[in-house]
Image 1: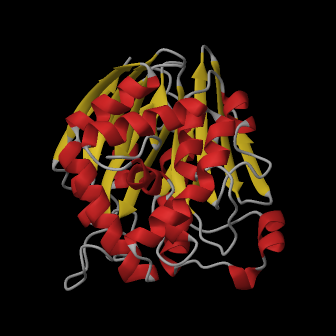
Image 2: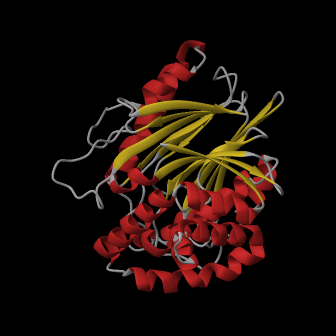
Image 3: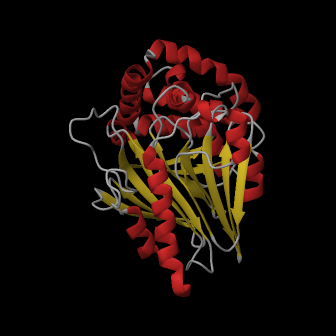
Length: 357
């Protein structure tokens, strides 16, 4: 996976992203052009028009985001509208048909040795070729270490304040013209503390549904918050001394009642994975055992209930643009402000790397 060191003004950060990962950005565009059409019968030209509806929300939230996307387009020699589509890809296609997978968790001391946050990221094998690791030094915000898809400026990672965020896709037919969820993730990582991050994304501030699991270690204080977000409502759980986990279905009764169960779409594997990650965490913490990074590596590589397992492998005969595999996994040690990345399936990674502040 390509590692990008990005610094300067928002425009300069975007410019360097585009220049250093030009081939990966072009791969993202090709991948989503095919995915949009195969899954939702949306052409790239139509997607570019659909993306424009989010410009006002992005500008009113943080104009730096627009500047970074403008620089990115310049650096990759593509149109701004192409980069806008990538950053709004969840709003354009996930309310229609296909969703990301992903199993996420946060576990806090004394249940664990350190404050941990992590997940698998399950998506099309075609898009795994576009993954990059970004190390960002901003003029107007914290330093960030983030795994993302080339061309997308917000995703999964942590910042220098020990604040991290994970993403689980949630699918419903609700959407609005508010901030795309990937830019919401960036706004979380642009925050100094977890309460600030929370307040940036609740109360209908996002354009589609998603689950954000965020956690922070700040000195001796640890906290994790899970937010099921929709354009209308949100559900919330938090802990300072236990664990939270999530997959790809709504659990909050308030959110489900607001959307209506007939307007939700969830695949069976999401229920299999949430049950299994809960079993694994409970098994690791029984008899007052303290969870270690090694335990978590085992959870992420688990194959129970295969093919509906936490570690997902390609089903033979499926298209690279419509299949779902585990493309990478991360374990964030928020206490030590480090990120352990495994590229590919956690059971047999293509590569492993550690990043820290």
